[in-house]
Amino acid sequence: MADPIDSSTSTSDPNPIVSPITLLRPRRVPFEHGLLPIQKLIFADPVQALSPLKQKLSSSSTLRVDSPALADALQISSDHARLILDTLASMLHSESDPLVNARPEDVDSVGADLRDLILFLYIQSYKRLLPRSHKDSASVADVWPSTSAFDGFLSALSPLQLVRSNTRRFMPSQADEEAHQLSYLQKHLANILSLLSEPVEGEGEDSQVLTMEGFEHLGFLIQFGDKGYEGIPLSQAAPFFANSDPDMPAVPVPASQVHDWLLENIAASLEHVTEKVSAKENGPQGGSDQDVAMPDASSSSVKASQSTRNICFIEGVSKSSYVKQASDLKHSSVKVINCHDSVIYILAPLRYATIYGCSDATIVLGAVGKAVRVEHCERVHVIVAAKRVCIANCRECLFFLGVNQCPLIVGDNHKLQVAPYNTFYSQLEEHMTEVGIKATINKWDEPLALGAVDPHDSLSHPAGVSDAQAESAAHLDPDQFTNFLIPKWFEDESTGLTKDNPFPLPDAYLTSQQRNQRNLGEIKQILREAPLEENRKRELSCALHVYFKDWLYASGNIRQLYCLQGD
Image (tube, rainbow, N blue to C red):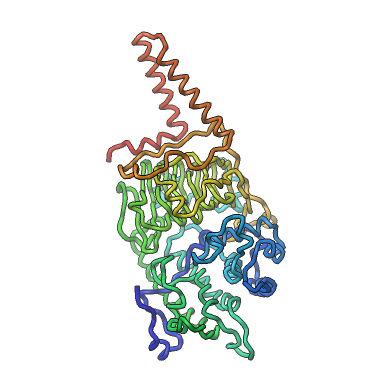
C-alpha cells in the first residue's frame, strides 16, 4: 500500500491524482446488497427529492434519523422505514458507527447518520448491468437449468428469463461492473457532493464547502486501494486533508475542489479498468473475471480464485462436492457462481455472500454477519446462518435459515420454501459470535416480499406492473423437515464446541423430528427381531437398498455422496 500523499503534492498541484497503486475504486457492497425494490425510493431527480428531505431531517442536533421520522419524511410504511435502516446498517463502511452493532430493540434510538442515509437513498436510482452472454454457450448447456413451464409467465418483466434464455447469460464480470459503477459515480458526483456539502456565505461555485467528516462519508461509495474494507481512510488519500493536525479541526474545502480531484481520479481508474476489460475480452473468458490470483480448485473443472479485494470466487463446480474451511478461506466475502448438481460447503465466518446462477445444488454457508444474496437460482437448497438474506428471481428453491432479520424476497420467484436451520459443524457458534449472529433470534418464518419488478435492472417493463408484489415463500411442511449432516472433513474440526443445532426448532418441527427418530428406532427394532431366514433377510436388505437408492436420486441427496468419489 502506498503511503498517503505528502504535503508537497498538494502544494504543487491543487488537484493531483493519487498514485496508481492506490486507484480509486467503487465500494461494491451498497451496489450489490443495498438496493431495495421500493418504488417510493426511486427518484427521477434525486437532488430535487433529497435536498428538502435532508433539510427536514437535519433538525436533530445529532444528525441521526430513526424509522418513524424516515417513514414520515418519505411517506412510506414503518416496516419499510425499518427495512431501510436495517439494510443500511449492513452496508456501512465504518464499523465504529453505532448503528452497525445496535441491538434490534435499539436501532431506532440509535438511528442512522443522515449523510449515510442520504447516500443510501441516492443510489436507489442506480441501474445494474444486464447479465451478459457467455462465449461458449454449448459448454454450459448441459448443466444450465432446463426450460421450465414457468418460462411463459411474466416473461416481459422477468430478469430470470434473460439468464435462462438460449443465449445463455451470466453474471457480468467484476471489471465490467466496476467500470459501470465508476461511470455512475462520475455522472452523479456533482449531485452527491452537493448533498454532502454545507453552504457558506457568498455566491459562485465555491459557496459550498465539504468538511473532513462529510468527506469521510464518501467512503460509503468509494475507497482507495485494493484491500476492500481495510483500505486507507479517504481523508488520508486526499491531499487537502492528509496532513491535518489531529488536534485541530480540519479546514473545510470548497466542494468544487473536491469534485475536480475526484473526477480526475475516477477518470484514471476508468482508464485502468477499461484496459483490463479489453485485455480480458481478447483472451479466454470465464464467467466472472475475479481479478484472478492463485487458483484453488478441487478438480480441473472448478474455477476457484482469490481476489485481491477480499472476495473468494467459487465458480463452475459441477457434479462434485467442494469444501472451504475457515483455515483456508481468509476472505470477508464469497461468491458462488454457476455451480450445478453439486454440494458446496463454505464453513467459515463471512461478511457477505452471493450465490448466483446455480441449479440442482446444496450450498451450506457457515456464518454470514452482514448479508447474503441468492439470485437466479433453480432447485437449490441453501443452508445458512446469517444476519440478513435476500432472495431474488429464484424458483423451486428451499432455504433452511437461521436469520436475525426477516428474509427479503424480491423479483420473479416461484415455488420457494423456507424452513428453520437444520445443521451444525463444530465451529459454527464460534463463527456466529465472531460475525455477530444471535441464535436466540430466528425470523426464518417471516419473509418480506417486495416488488416483483426490480427497478434497478436495465430492462424496460410493461406499464402498470411496477407495483406488483413478489411471490412469497411457503413454509416447509414439518413432516418433510430433516437434519442435514455435514461431514467432518478435517481432524481440527474436533476443536470446536458446537455439538448441535444452535437455533431452537419451532415446536411443530421439533415434534416431527422426534417422531421421525422414534419411527426409525422402531423400524430398526422390528427388522432386528424379524424371524426371517438368511435368504429372506438378504432379499429384504436388497429391497431396502433399492428403495434407498431411488430416494437418493429422487430427493437430490445423491449429491452428498460426491465427496466419497475418488479424485
